[in-house]
Amino acid sequence: MQAAKDAMTFLKKRAIIEEEYGKQMVKLAQSMAETFDKSHPRSGTYGDAWTSMLKVHETVGEQRIKFSADISEVADDLQLLYKDTEKGRKQVKDVGLKHEKNLMEADASLEKCKQRYELQSEDWERAILQKNNDPLHVPKKGLFKNNRTQAQLNRMEEDARIKATMADQNYRQQLQTTNASRVEYFHVHLPKILMDLKAVGDECSVALRYQLARYAYIFEQALTADGIALDNDDGLGLRSLTEKIDKDADLNDYIKSYSSRSTKVQKSEIPYKEYSMSTTALSVLNPNPVFGIDLDALMERDREEVPLVLRKCAEAVETFGLNTVGIYRLSGTNSQIQKLKAAFDRDCAGVNLLQEEFVADINNVTSVLKLWFRELPDPLFPRSSYTHFLNAAKIEDERMRILGLHTVINDLSDAHYATLKYLMAHLDRVQQHQRHNKMGSANLATIFGLTLMGNDSSNMLASAAVGENQRLAETQWQVKVVQTILDNYALIFETDDA
Image 1 (tube, rainbow, N blue to C red):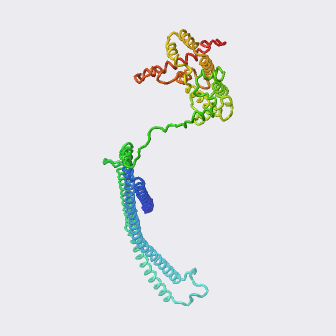
Image 2 (image 1 turned 180 degrees about the vertical axis):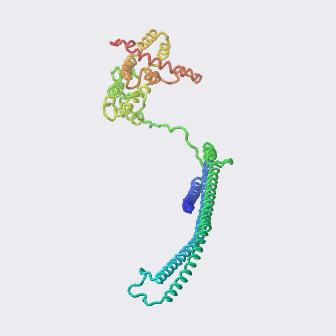
Image 3 (image 1 turned 180 degrees about the horizontal axis):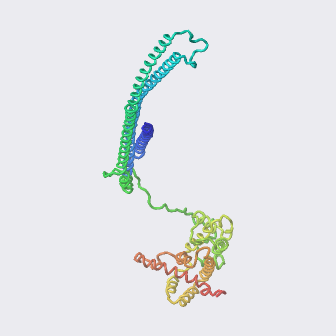
């Protein structure tokens, strides 16, 4: 009974938990589905899969509610079993108490008869002794008068004998009755009571086992139903629904849904459009510009072999940037580059690159220097010597290649020669710190190849008919020229170190 009661209590509480879980699951799934429908009216395959997944959870919740009801039914049956078992136990107990009471009454009646028998026998014994004048039983203090006659004593003894005989008969009769009751109780009633109690217990145990088996079956059914809801042959399980999501199709549908409202988008970048000042205004702002001025003209104007803008930028780099990783490879900020360019064009001699605003990002300085080389009307390697430089670079013998480049360089004008020598000396110092800045001669040559030799079509064996492979090969020879000069700087320019 206690086991049935414990099982009933457990199942009732389990039913409450399952019911609450099921209701909350259904509520959550429905609310999420409503919210999703309002927020995503065009959701494609993902929306279909997600809505179906929520429906699966709603189904699981409904199944849990049904599972809770089935558990409650088992719990109610266990409660009824407990009550029926208690009722049967009380009935057997009442019968047992009735027979036990009868036995106790028989024992009590026997005890009374025995006491009456003993009392009457004592009286008879006393009368016999008095009749025979036994001195031990003669009354003291005059309780019996000594003047009783023998006839009276005989009559008293006879009455006592009759009463004792009757008491003996009653005692024997009651003893027989009581023993018969005891035999019947211990051999008939008590075994039957115990068997009836065992039958009640057995019936409860069998019913309890049946209800627990029934609960196990219901539990298995609920789990199976959940499993089928999660994954089934109809393709409506969570895994199958997830596999139906097609992000590419959803994106195409989404774009198509907005195609009617779309506007034409400008795909190309918006170019920078510089304001064109008049020649008079530019001459006022930049009386001595350095950008876009031919090297020979710049040398004649400023009376300097090496342009001041080159010297200032190189000195700033050698002071602050030799250990900067990717020096000359990384670009600066365009706004700062244009600001620095304007400052050089306005007053090159007055520009102080050692100020914090310029050296805070040394890449701004290197970008300005590369821009200055790119804007030269005639590149540092003049167009008139372009073919000679490439032919010298193509010489397979290294010693002859160096000699060929040395010859071509010596034929340069003073302005181009001095500028090239100064630049190569500077880049040589940069590559000497390549352990820190990661910029060896190959990296520097790749960066300065097109910048120093020009990248217009006239220098690239130039026409639309030139193939891509030829242009790539041309670029590689340009890089080869710069790298060879940089690797053999001391030999080509006949420095003191050579």
